[in-house]
Image (tube, rainbow, N blue to C red; front, side, top):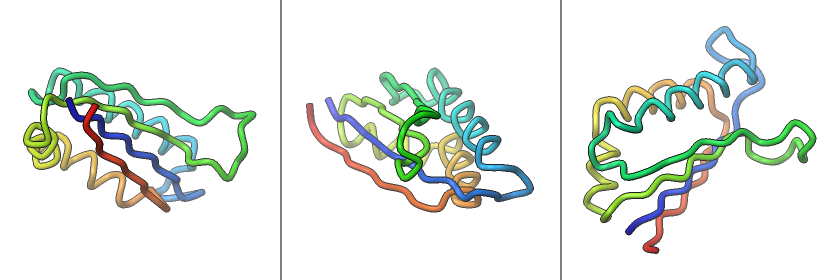
Length: 101
């Protein structure tokens, strides 16, 4: 099994919306991939706690796949590419780690 962990830091304002609004949209879009992308075995998306350090990343995705091939299929899936297009407009930074469990 492969675990895919991605963290995002969002711009304060982007695409005509506040950071909070864009984080909520991103969370909804990422959660909607479950059941749409066949190789996505499981996933969850969490938002940084309001009381947490504001220098933390704003959103994290933790997803699991049966193999690296399945992760690569997820990456090129049209539904995932749509999320990526949105994220590139509203994020400041992205960090990712993929590892075998």
